[in-house]
Length: 212
Image (cartoon, rainbow, N blue to C red; front, top):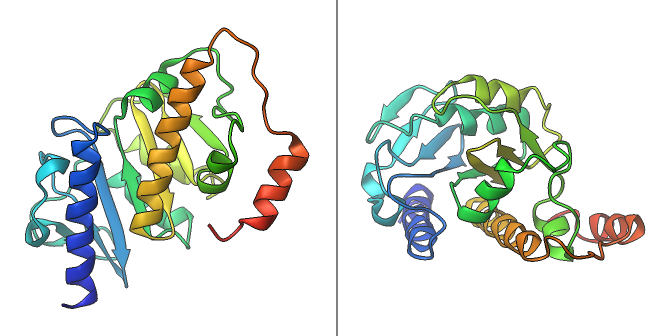
C-alpha cells in the first residue's frame, strides 16, 4: 500500500476507536491529517464510527476540495492549525463530554484552562486556550485560532468542544484523549483541595519531553 492508503486506513481505524469509546457521538467531531502538500479530512455528515478510507476527502494546499466526499463543514478549524503551526501533522476536533463540559465553565482561566494535574497533560497537550464562543460552522473560529500565532497545540471552543493538533495522526488522537481524561479528573476533584505540579515540575517535563 502507498503511504496515503496506509494513512487513510489509520484514520478510519482511529476514528472508529474514538467513536466506540464514546469520544464522539452521532455525526459530531472531525479529523484530518496532512500528507505532503495535501490534507485528508473526514467527510461532512459522517459518523466517526464508520469512515470509509476511500471516501475521506482530499484538500489541496489552499484548502480546495479535490477528491473524495465533501469535507467537514468545520474544515476551517483544521486549516487554521496547519497554517499557524508548521509542524502540525494532524488535527482532531471532538465534542467529548468532559472537555466540552470544561469549555462551558465560567470559572476557568481562558488563557490556561487545564491546570497541570498530571505529567501527561503537560507532555502531550500543553497549555490549553479557550477561545470565545462563535456559532458552529462560522469560519470566525478558524480566524480566532490563527490569531493565536501557533502558541497553543490545543484549544477549547467555548460551549462547543476541543480542537487538538499533533505532529502526526496518532499523536493528535492521543493528545485529544489525554485532554478529555484530564477534564474528567478535574471534574472529579471539583470542590476539594488540589495539588498541582509546580512550575519547576512543568519546566522539567517540557525540557525532557519537548519532542512528544
